[in-house]
Length: 518
Image (cartoon, rainbow, N blue to C red; front, side, top):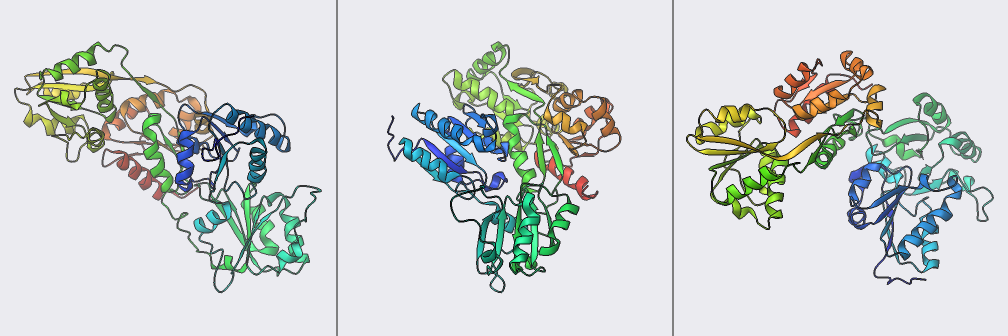
């Protein structure tokens, strides 16, 4: 048996929080980034797996043998065997690992096996529900205590069963987990033991996410409210006088995109920032990577460009995307060089996002358009500076030729070099396309003409019909992208006023404000 150093845990029992990625703790994100294996519960959002290393193996407990009660021996064995192999394991559990999460049982199995471990707490569902619904779980006039209660006990357990008589007299808020399926029984037990039938009650489903739903009633009417509202497990039941002090319009549900379903189509490595912004606005976000960004199939062009820059053969270096910045400077690094190869060359970028990518290498752009972040805008901003000079455009393997054509009118020479390839990446079948076919996504964001062509090229007749009927809105980052969409025969619901990621999000917000939540 391998006895590990207690100061160097190999297994981390980690609380994933209630669902919102923003509620994951810093410590949880830190250990996820170190994990060799992430074993996660079925209710943990897969978005949280983005905090893990791309090299990590991820596995949902549903993949283990047996039904729910039979999986735990397999969970314990996998944790122990992986740790004994010297691997770091994160056991990712919804909410907090020690609140109705069997974390105590898993910790006991690890102690018995001599495996060093650490427990990382998480935000439990009751705390999140209180915050996101603006229900004061404690209130100096109504509740000085909270009771966390399971609504689903192990049959025939040897210990004391729930004392519903005591809970009916509890002077505070009851937060009942895993009780939706037994709600009529729970209500009956509380009423039988003297709980006032007019006590305020609530049920919340998927607290802290854009899919959050809730109903409110008195205790004797909460089951009817749940049924009419269509709420199902998993959900949390709250009972207590403090619930009457809830906000009529909770802050989260007042966010402009609350409950709206939005598709982000940026390449995977660039999508996270936009996803986070949309989630912060209350959206339910899906992702579809329309293109993959890859090293050029033929490196001779970019290698020649690096050599030419090193010899000072260019007056201007122009980047039309953040991908181009990273691709060129990665190749510089591959030669064992650094940004000093740029020497005296002056640099222009198509917009602030590309300029920000350049600043990651401690290099500042000399020219960035003030307002119009497009080939047209860059040509207009750069044209007065390049008369009689030599210009190198670092770009993708495909795209418009407009910038080269416009600069060639004034520059001594303009050449283009492919520094990265864009490759179509959408499979004809997949969960996101199925969601579009079912009409479950309302807004499709299109951040470039190339991405728009890739996304729309994957649409079948069913999806095209939903777009034509206005059930799916296509939102373009610029008139240029909107033109590409229309050329493919699709309507454009909105175009960004400012041709940036934030401008694209603002266009979605404007659309959402003009129509009711369905």
